Amino acid sequence: MSKGEDSRALAGRVALVTGASSGIGRACAVALGAAGAKLVVTGRRSEKLAALAGGMPACVTRAGDITDPALPGRLVDAALETYGRLDLCVNNAGVIATGTVEEIDIDAVCHMVRVNTEAAFRVAYTVLKHFRRAGQGYLINVSSVLGTKVRATAGAYAGTKHAIEALSDALRLELAGSGVKICCIEPGLVMTELHRDFPVHPKDLLNIARPLVPDDVARSVLFVATQPDHVAVPRLMILPHDNEI
Image 1 (cartoon, rainbow, N blue to C red):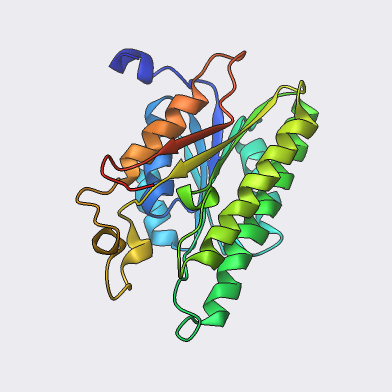
Image 2: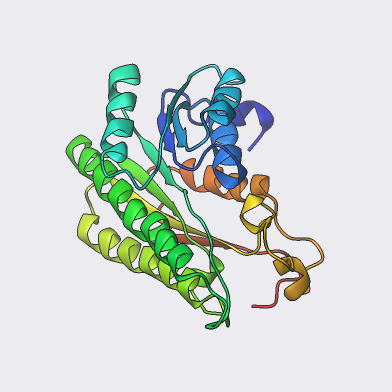
């Protein structure tokens, strides 16, 4: 796809991105906006959302806690009230908590389950109800390579991503032939704020010299979102070149 085609690929489409104040979500919002999409973005940090929207021609911000049960409905309403439609959702908001049995903070684990699973499920079902009525739409769930495997000390995080994979597979079966598509993006290690408080960075633990960056994942999301209507991409794994599976 040429640079000129990039700027038109999603013209007229409206995209919702969760967890957009930083990292993968922010990169996805920038990539989708550059491809012509109008945006609704959410995250906890209103000042970062405002800075993101300031560089976009059409971007509505709705700051909030993704675990708020009412937030997904408000996001869909914002898209419909502002643009009259919603075509794509990047269901991205997430956190990570890892550690040994002796060390792990179980309250942080339970919060992670609420964000990565409960809130992601609420977003999925809320946007899919709209897509089902509209007869079209694309839900792109940001999963992880750990949605397909496990690692010691990361079982709880992997469990939240396995849940996303299972839900996505079941929803694809349920909505087959409806015009609604569902994809799981499965990144390997990505350099984001999620790992800033780790005593040892995962790239060192996993011996990965050059982890992914958020723009790498955003390109994958854009690839999925710009396929022809008759093409479905159920899942797409993207890994650092030196990642040991």
